[in-house]
Length: 80
Image 1 (cartoon, rainbow, N blue to C red):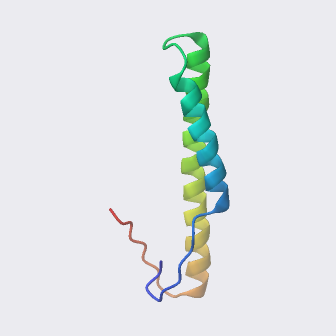
Image 2: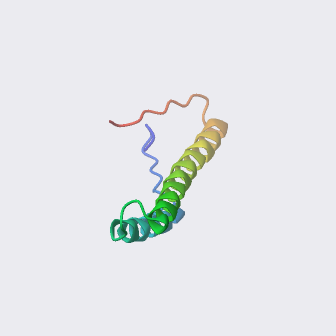
């Protein structure tokens, strides 16, 4: 949300990644720890985490760039 009240929702593709991650983590939890299938599934989960992080960063960069074009000064605060 910007200071003038403009609200941008989360990108739709992030929901798809979260569903995939949820399914992959459930599958990983059922596997025997240390097995080859477990190692492969663990890498799949790690890749999905990386995709989610990259898509969030890409979304923020695109929003920041569009705001920067329309407004003279932009400050981004992350709620903690």
